[in-house]
Length: 533
Image (cartoon, rainbow, N blue to C red; front, side, top):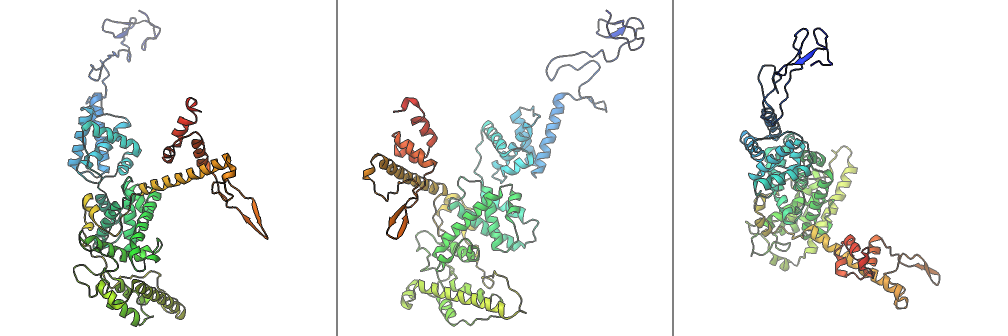
């Protein structure tokens, strides 16, 4: 049978096929190249072609599609687990889990690296070891939410029950990571590690980690202990190292400072401690919290009245102290002994009963401390202006330069169970921030409901309303009172007030409005024509 294609040898259009399927020229008898491929249709294990073999390498070795896919899949597993610094046994465990999930078929495509990262995360969580999901997502190159969905599918398929995320282990790993390139003494790193574990578990007790991502909390505590021990560290660098947002880390850092300020209110000068100067007073606060946590249940709680202040040094030193303006910090370092909390192991020389005998109140002690601090600040300014050749001193002084304030003997300095953490007393019993915010939101909505009812009643019954009603709209008109002109208080109405008024007019229960589900209530009572009255 002639073909429209010419022969490659004689150019004659006399190409025919034999019973084997080979194409040759009937004029010259030459076999035509590239026309003898036999097509076979089937699965992966179908027979190969006659002259062309799938996956033929230059060395002559032949690999089918399945073997090639498995080879590249194992290479991807090796690369990703190496980026995560997995040991060889852990790599084998990840490979075995993937083989079980895919039934030995492995896979290829954009989804397969996500599966590798999810299995790696599950393997580490099974051994209660710290591995952040954001870190795995950064190595794999996928979104953290996509990786989280894959982790959930892997856990459900393998029927596993993962332990809770250990924030203390995450902090220990963060300390090793962030201070690896910084020249810090090992003793100081060990000290900061204990202080950080103490603060992390205090934040767990204060519910500052409940419902939040744990790594920003780790970054906030790490930044605080670094500043407390005068280690140069930026919160932006810590956030980048832990793969978390800088704004979230700053918010957790602010919450930590605010909690420490609340704890510091029990000190004699606690009313003067704010978020801005809490870092300067942090040694006093942490020492108080450490002694407070070491007190057992049933014992008399440590307070300002029986905290073990050394009244000999406090009263005698403050009244007869000679200022040495030529020394560093002008003797402020000796100020630490005035409010030093005595160790529970050693009995104090003065007890709370002696305060009544001496007739010295806590307000008096606080006044003595304030006057002494003012004298120190005046001496500081005089020293800077009086001698130009004197070395310029920094604004911050080491208040505990002569006395070690951190003991590290509290049980909160090492990892405890959550039940044990909640039983400890660190000087503050806080409520969860979400619960407090919810209570404030309920209170704010109740006030809006009350104001909306007053506005509605004023429109319906204007004769029953006073001129100074709080439910008035934004009124700026003046009232003449002789020579004086007094303006009424402005009450602004926003979109939420208008929604509350609309729901009240449609006879919605106040308990339902207080919950704040405005869209649902509007759909049910306002925009639903069947329920309109």
